[in-house]
Length: 156
Image (cartoon, rainbow, N blue to C red; front, side, top):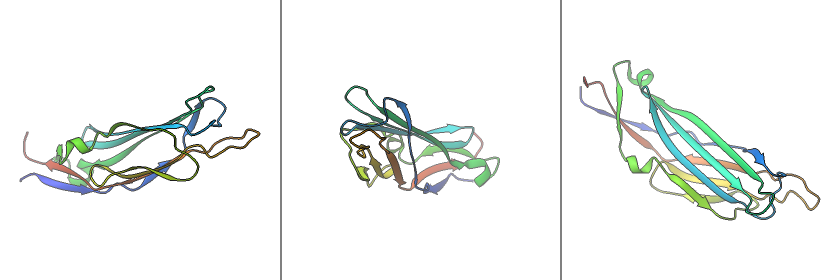
């Protein structure tokens, strides 16, 4: 049987990061970094994402959110003899590290692509925890484009 292409549209995802250091209150807009990549582990394709908010001044308040999700289990979707061959556009899948300086109050579009795995990332940075302290509430929301995988059940 010839190779077959799977069309995968990952569900939107998002989350609230954990505080790694500092007082949980950004003094001004933090720098926002993220990286998205995919891994094939025994015919299960995983999507991994790391996002980090860092205050550029002391006390260097830092939040981080990491997630790992199953994109597709090829064997459970196609059968035990099927295996992963390739991504249609490999270069689109490892976004690398993207840095966006100074994200502020409210949900902002921080990354918008018509090609590649990520369609849109929205994030909140400094939410103005208050003059007398309080905590900021950063968060992230991610929408995806279709991802195309080639699979096969031909003998290797």
